[in-house]
Amino acid sequence: MTMPLARFTVLDLTRVRSGPTCVRQLADWGANVIKIEATDEVDTGKGLGGERDGPDFQHVHRNKRAMTLNLKSPEGLAAFRRMVAKADVVVENYRPDVKTRLGVDYDSLAAINPRIVLGSISGFGQDGPYAKRPGFDQIAQGMGGLMSVTGLPGQGPVRAGIPVADLTAGLYCALGIMVALLEREVTGKGRWVHVSLLEAMIAMMDFQATRWTMKGEVPKQAGNDHPTTIPTGLFKTADGSVNIAGGGEEMWRRIVRVLGIEEEAKDPDIATDALRSKNRAKVNAIIERVTLTDTSANWVAKFNKEGVPCGPVYSMDQVFADEQVKHLGMEMTLQHPRLGPLNVVRAPMQISGVACARNPTPDRGQHTDEVLAEFGFSAEEIAALRAAKAI
Image (cartoon, rainbow, N blue to C red; front, top):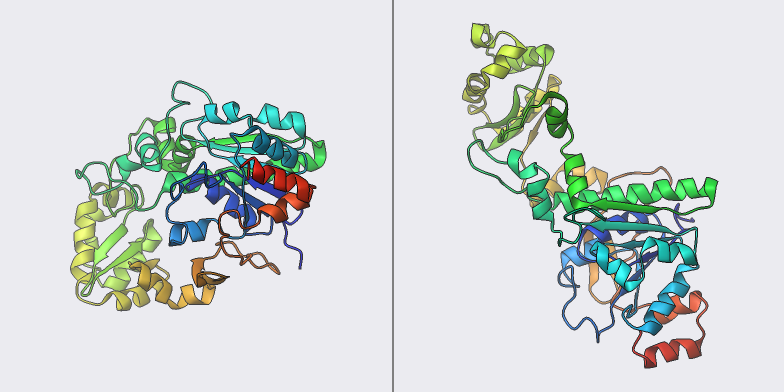
């Protein structure tokens, strides 16, 4: 079956995580993605993005073909520009000044192919006082406000356990590219889609950000408690901990019933939702005195039976051992010709009648000759590029 995005050709200049995350959204659904990397002469190290055979690189660069191209050489840049003429999308995450210096900025590409969509990810934006600063996920977590609300009260700023800014910048850029491709079907014209780690991080702050923009509230660290919905948080049990989410009067009545704390709930300090918010510590203490008397599994079953959201706190091995996770099939196997079977995480969306593509991450330059031939390069031209060390 033809994959949904098979009609689009994507030239992938991205490195590390944010850019590859963007491109993977397109590759997973069948886009003809060509990963363009520097030649061995230019990139003498292991390359950006970690060990090529490691879990990170193999996960994020799947479903692509790979070629080498030295964009710093006149011959390599000319070959790239020739490919742009037949492509639909170019994605890069260089610093803003680098793409202009290389000649892969939007104006240069659109002059070759007015239908081209350029997706760009930067640290701080394409212009402005910080535009030339190097971007990194943790810097954006700090500047976007996430670290200020993460962690236990009084603990000081804490980074999230995943690269939130990188990942969300990639997702937003992929969404923007799809919007531009849809608009192109009407106008026939491409667009420049650009996202920064800082913008993505601020956008992901969501209601925490609008608490400030709309009401002038500066959110603080709330630890494992939800900042506005009470009682929602982490509670110790006889053998671990569970998350319970139960804001609002009806949910509170259910919690009271499950825990058997009808008498404690009569306390005038916690009689209403507003009072429970004000006296969160007292509410949590009442709940935890009871949750400590039984196991996590039993509490999860009891609360969910009454319609109260409740779940365990898993380590990663426990995540993939969970029966629902197994049912969903979040772990998928790729057959790598050199490394053998590799288990990675599939795309989280499910589209009826379509499966996520399952091609492994290619080796560096694996498809160079094949791709160039598809773009109309003759055997003699490919040999000349190789002699010039452009590929």
